[in-house]
Length: 399
Picture 1 (cartoon, rainbow, N blue to C red):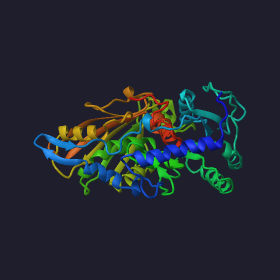
Picture 2 (picture 1 turned 45 degrees about the vertical axis):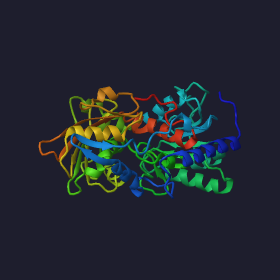
Picture 3 (picture 1 turned 60 degrees about the vertical axis):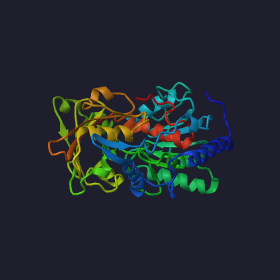
Picture 4 (picture 1 turned 180 degrees about the horizontal axis):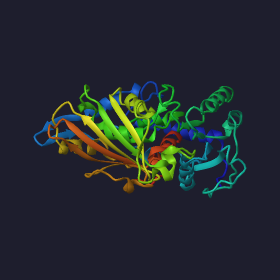
């Protein structure tokens, strides 16, 4: 069990970290620190500016314009008190497993209506009993919590956020909130936080963080390096297949193992929420996304067709991806198309294939991600680390 520490010490440590990263990072924060990628398109323009010249055999790029913040940037070694709301699902359990191994995350409250009164399994730092916390309960507990994680279904989070906001008007306390649902992914008052693409200095200064979706994470990482070279008149076509854990624990055809046997089920053929998310946070890029669910439990594969505005070859493409993600410990650029079984229970994204057709103006990029890890819980912990002042990869097994 962690020893108690004062609110003042926690606040000072987090403040010192935010000040240090704001002044030392080569990527400066936007004037509105709670901006997402859609309102900070310059983050992608920086990637475009990295292409400084062209040689006979390919493109020359500078280093990653948004490099990871390592241990040298961390100034907080005080345990943070964590509250998890909505812990029954697969993502909640995956996050609990990560928090159990984290040196500085002190899980104190875990809420689940269905499991209320039962003992939490898989957490060894203290004995925790599931509670059924209402928005009023969360507001009352807020001054004793440094970070709330909302692992609730879409459309359920709002009363909790409103209750915390109201309580903080009186207390002045500023807990970090990370929402795993889609509720605030288009809200400019929140930081849409995909650390490899969002300015890390912005995340460090944020207290309201919207965690990207699983498909949307892999898709954006698979597309972003090529934004300066995409033909705006064409359509980025994304074929996605997920394991059935992506359908959650509530019984449906999409997680019916019998129905899925020897089968592939397409769903939400148009206007899927992730289609809008991908397009919005890539600055309005034209995207068509068709998701499917398959018979494996966890893991996503994406095959992405990207139209190009100039002739390129696969060597050009691969160099652009390697340069853009230089130093990233949760993104791995590979030669062959990555396979789902190789990303199973891993914590990053593999991007590969990078095949150019005979015209030189269409590239196929493949990406895989574990939807419960980097697609949700790992990304949540990555954001928590940055916002609370720890090293970005603290407690995360890297690629």
